[in-house]
Amino acid sequence: MRGFERASMLLSGRIRRAGEKRGFAVARLLTHWPEVVGDEIARVCRPVEVRYGRKEGFGATLTLLTTGAHAPLLEMQKEDIREKVNACYGYAAISRIRLTQTAPTGFAEGQAAFAPAPRPAAPPPDPGTVAVASDLTVEVHDEGLRAALQDLGTRVLSRPKR
Image 1 (tube, rainbow, N blue to C red):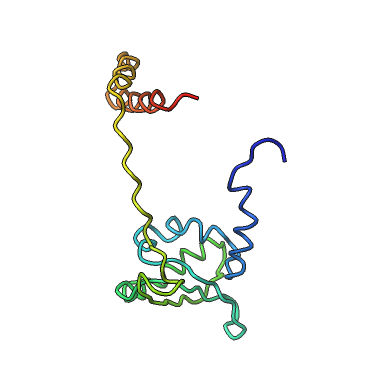
Image 2 (cartoon, helix red, strand yellow):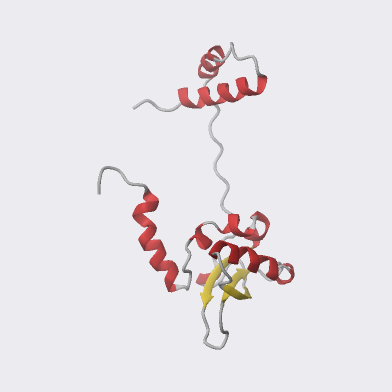
């Protein structure tokens, strides 16, 4: 190893091994679930397991965890979800999708929230820092660009000094 490494590179082997225990040959399906199926679907379900059965022939069964209220909606979208997941794999890896319902709280498998927790609001910047950033961008004529540069300058100037 040379110098600093990305955290993703340090953890990629462990994530891959943990995913392979559940049948996920492509960890991207787990880590980028909202990008694969879309934000609306990702808010109400998550992938739990990929199972390759002997009797199913080519293709596997993807198990999705959802709550009871969302299951009928997902049932109607199974084919679209299957196409999006297979696009992630690059071939027709998934032949069936199985939905499993549970309450948002309860057993260990069902305790995960589907939506991420909201981030805490950042404290407002110091008025002096905003004034300095405004003075630096006074010569920019485009309003949108000036506002973006002023926001960037405020964020850079308000970072703690080391």
